[in-house]
Length: 322
Image (tube, rainbow, N blue to C red):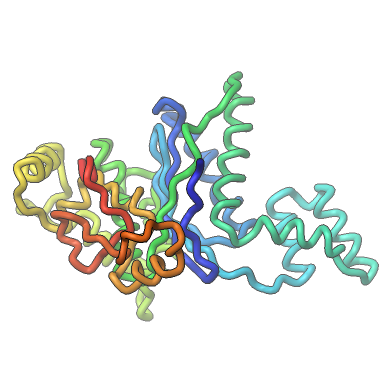
């Protein structure tokens, strides 16, 4: 039986992740990643969610998204979303256009049907994965399921220091995979897209770094300092350093925050809820019915990791960090 997700009724941030079936590298091609990237942006615009950052890998992807409370949309605003998503000559867009042209209003049934698909992380991910799998199977003469499972999600406290940590973990995926030494060189992540000048990607980073009245390059530089820090040589992490970080972890040595983010941390993908102790406890009380009577508290530490300000809902004991 599928367990319900931890979702918030107010504006919330979610770290979402989905894998390709059997771990196959079906997203390896740059053109395939580009298609997924475009679909992600269009789906987000239609659903009214913000992509804070993301990382598209060859057999899985990560998306950090902020889902606001659904606003009141006028018929004109609803038309813009539909037209941008389906095209201005699509039946849905033409129907709304006609209703507005004659001085009428969009039928409540149609309006409700469209609004039900907006401002919901589950709908956003479900439709994105479905639309992409339909495209992929058709264009690659393939049939059957594309995704290994339903997507995983972690409810993340919407505070700059928490969102920044999870964003860095996501943008560092290609570094952990050994594809690049600097995520700036991997164009299928939010950090690299922002560096290339994409305003949506810049907005995502500014949403937790703040603008402080400065140039967006200053904001990007501040975030970049956390991503690849400065090692003893002043260079981004290389293969040898990654091997040394893994060795230190396996021998139970102490790692810095910078070093820890170069490991696979399941707390960020399977912890259910991530944030301050107060935030996790608040979510625990909201979802108290999902836990047995013996559990008295919700917040759990990220064992052996130098994120003292963070707590998670699940105490992962097996392969929590790899």
